[in-house]
Image 1 (cartoon, helix red, strand yellow):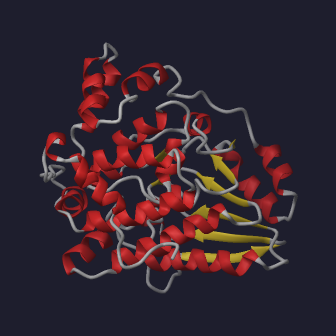
Image 2 (cartoon, one colour):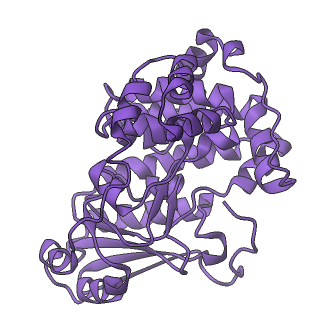
Amino acid sequence: MTTEAAAPPSESTVITSSHNGVGRIELNKPKLINALSQEMVGDIDDALASWRDDDSIKAVLVTGRGERGLCAGGDIKAVYNDIVAGTDENARFWNREYKMNHAISEFPKPYVVIMNGITMGGGVGISGHGSHRIVTDSTKIGMPETGIGLFPDVGGTHLLANAPGELGTHLALTGLPVGAGAALAMGLADYYVPDAHVPGLIADLEAGGEIPAVIERYAADAPENELAEAAGWIDECYAGDRAEDIVAALAAHENPDADAAAKLIGTKAPTSVKVTLAAVRNAGNMTLAEVLEQDYRAAVALTRRPDLKEGIRAQVIDKDRNPQWSPATFEEVSDETVHDILTTDHEEKVFP
């Protein structure tokens, strides 16, 4: 999430090319940490569609330009502007984005993505569903949406629900990022390659070598899982299905990190926290397509409620970091409200 100037209009924000049978997708909005616009989503989706049945393309490689990360997520300032304008651009953006996420998951050829630096929100959507997901020393993977009045979309709850124990629930509610070690342990990534070796890896992939063999040549032993010692209290405290119970259990736990998590969740949008928890629980028994359809229903519904506009205002418009959530407490968010947000159909669907 950033508000720096975007790339010059004359420069494409998604650069596609092919080298020795490898289709290359480079996100090219480095000053915005490659935040996704509707146009970028369309370009990625179109490239995948054109390469899917192209026999000259044997694999796809996805990277982000700049030193700061693969992708910081969606362009939330654009989301805010659309809410203010009252148009349906957000709905169209999410519909196309979720279709793209599913296309990645079903891509019939190796889909290699280098998740260096900040890989959050929509960045998880273009990476987490791929077949060969590579993390590095600089990787920071997270879904921080509860802090802006949204929820972990782009199929994020599908990934988090399938993480060991309650680690995914912890990340979903707090929005905290993890590094390479925890990402691998949680099933969010497949390989670790040190940052210094990434240029060589890219060069060898583009030289046309066998994808698994090339990656294995550069892959190193996984770094330490930074959440390993916390798994005990996380599994214990996040076991419930009510946000109030989880926060109370965290606050009462003797581990100071648990109390810090309780305080952190308490700063998030109450509606978002409750919707996120229910979405994660649902996702454990859903296909990715079903999760993405649930994501679309919830995303559209939340644009019609006050928190998303307020959360983005507080984070990137006025930057006062003091959102006034409505409702302001978990107790004021009814189960019926959560159910309606997750289940009410809208005019469009992701998968008609």
